[in-house]
Image 1 (tube, rainbow, N blue to C red):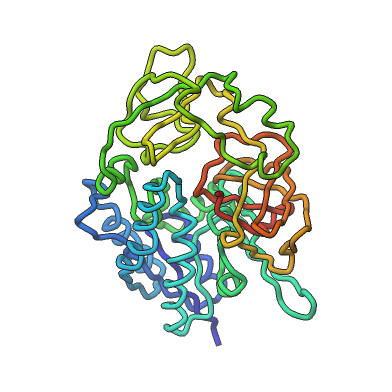
Image 2: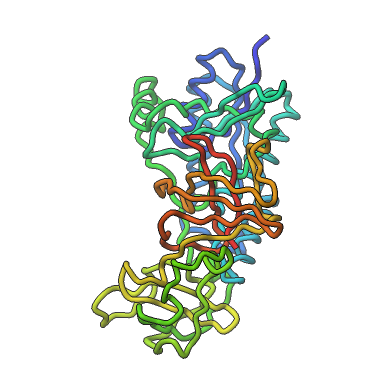
Length: 391
């Protein structure tokens, strides 16, 4: 009897080819399109990309001869992703909606729906791979990087659990993007030349500042420029105390001078350059800190400003997540890993220190733009071991 797979068909080339490959491998394939947004109180774009995507997904399913249906998850998406995003930005943090969408929508609600339909697995068009191994007599699942180093999307799945991985298939994980497009062209898929989607997971095109301004009020505040020689940064990287190495810099108004104004500190994130609209400096200004309670943005001049770099980060215990639960560190343990703090960032050598209060991640070299609310993910070779929300 054929195994049944429900494919999240997004209307893009990757999920289209994933559906085709599964059918070729002998699975009984059902295509399902997730509609995640139709809240008229918040405008995403003048265009309606989800409608185009839904049509493309339906055409692909017809072309492949597989059943197609759409599912409306907009209520859950608003509650679990959009409302969370607004709350985090309000606090001066920068969430990652794509990681949340995979954890809360695709591999939670969508997975539950598929299982109710009698599916054995769900599949997506992610560039990553699933591995299996025997571990003390039981099966352990691994989340592995995609073969295409330029498109590896394992980071976006860094919050998955063993239970979710056990039901997940990633058919294009062994392929490169050019190979995927070539397959799509060869079999005549309408999505073969379609550009990759930009914007929020399964919503489409979105200009984030405009999106945020519809819920977070515009509030004028000061932009302060901090010099590279500010006392806070002196000997910052020679300290061996874990707390000192991972704390955000303590910036205050007396350390610099006012160089302009902004529309709200909650619209900005550490490392940001665009949107400041302040000229007259020898080098571009970058955001090195925000204070949403005082509505102040702190900036530094130039890519090499020390305020842009930190040696480590902290993940509170409640925000710690281990895909490989068998490798979870006990209090007092430490271990070397490779880690990244954003998608596409090259993996960096680091050491994880487990303390009662959480995980301290100390990098071999200072990292640029460590941002509260984002996810840090740690790897062993090409296997993603765990992740956590940066405090």
